[in-house]
Length: 114
Length: 110
Image 1 (cartoon, rainbow over the protein chains, first blue to last red):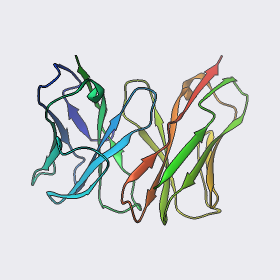
Image 2 (spheres, rainbow over the protein chains, first blue to last red):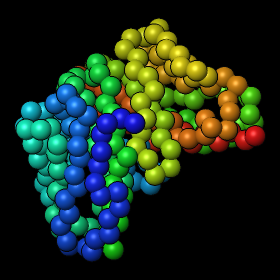
Image 3 (cartoon, rainbow over the protein chains, first blue to last red):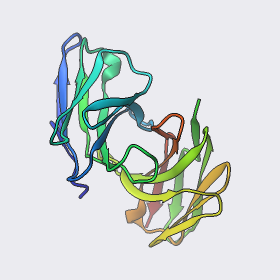
Image 4 (cartoon, chains in turn blue, red):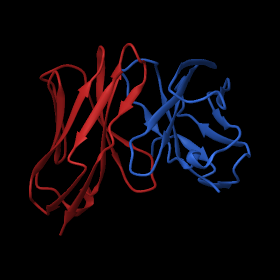
């Protein structure tokens, strides 16, 4: 049990719709990162938030956006969904932005776009 | 661009048959090399972090080692419950993100 929880666990959306995924970080962790994992692939970095500010971004278009709240919970928003957005979305929390601490992952949200 | 490559893609072992998984990396300014275990439909579970060449860490039947270009995850006398996908990821100071490999899917047969 990592203390990182994500909701919902599964979601089906139609192409063109918008979706919001939620993550509750482990207590005391001020950094949250979001990843997209396609079937059979490793997770791909979307972005990171530190103290409610975006702190780094991977190669994802602006229709992927996020928020981090004062209680360190966070959201991933995806607009204008495309079929290729179907994937497992993972959030990971850690106590720093550097590479010297472990990132603990939630169980993920499986998004299916039809 | 940071790159992490894992091999083999899939590995089938008999229970008790030891082996190693490989993770080669090309990153600018490695800050940490992470190993995770992932079960189907679940999030990755943290196993180890290695910070410098020559470092080794052990946990039960698993031992992770690090050189300047690759990391190995050695599995000694595996059991069927060790079956999972093993992911490695590199954290670079320049990218400030975890770059993952595609994973090795390990199956341990009883």
